Picture (spheres, rainbow, N blue to C red):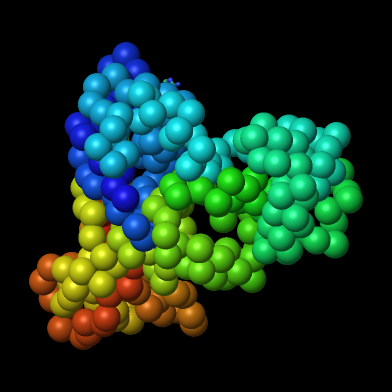
Length: 290
Ligand SMILES: Nc1ncnc2c1ncn2[C@@H]1O[C@H](COP(=O)(O)OP(=O)(O)OP(=O)(O)O)[C@@H](O)[C@H]1O
Ligand SMILES: [Mg+2]
């Protein structure tokens, strides 16, 4: 199975939401990582054929997805970034309803729905109306609906938004369990969501695909460039804007910093093993470290 993206471009007036993206996705889990506005959702909407790109094409096993049409939708599961509405349905009713839209036989659907409610941990609230659900619970209903037709291609736009840490971990487990025969693409700006689970990470910046590598390879490329050191608050404040800062922990007038630098920033600085969070700062910068 292969989803092939060739020169895909989406232009809005003078803004390129997605620009000349070319890559191939085969079985496995892919993490699409990029800051707000990078083009993640736009690329995903193109991949699920709800948006026709300005330029370029997407093929599944050699056939254009827009021509495959219904046949493509049959093997597709999609969680949009904005998933909601249907507040008068209970979780179970909603999933049964989506199942019927997807043409799943009602007896099969009933079993499938209950299995999925169990999988995403919503069994005990399946008879509750969606309008009473928290953000994380709604997200989990969204994940369940994307899985209803046992999709070969699963596109999840920020599936972990609003999930608490234990739910994030549970989702990672579910994804790796079901990934054997699927192409799974999930977007996030939270590095830990994909650090352990993704076979490959796709970094997207201003619409362009700037890296597509296994997490290990991305990390190896940063070897020797991640440093920590302790400095006093005054020096830190003076130098802050020149540092590519991953983290700063303040304690008792001192600051322990973690920075990216291709040369030794200070004689007291020591190199440390890169983490995916460092990769994020390296490529996208960090503007919320204080
Ligand atoms: N329908 C549209 N009309 C005009 N501009 C758009 C439209 N959709 C997206 N954009 C622009 O395209 C760019 C990419 O948006 P997109 O929603 O794909 O980013 P994203 O990576 O999903 O961001 P986020 O992390 O905030 O969800 C942004 O600059 C956005 O403003
Ligand atoms: Mg988005």
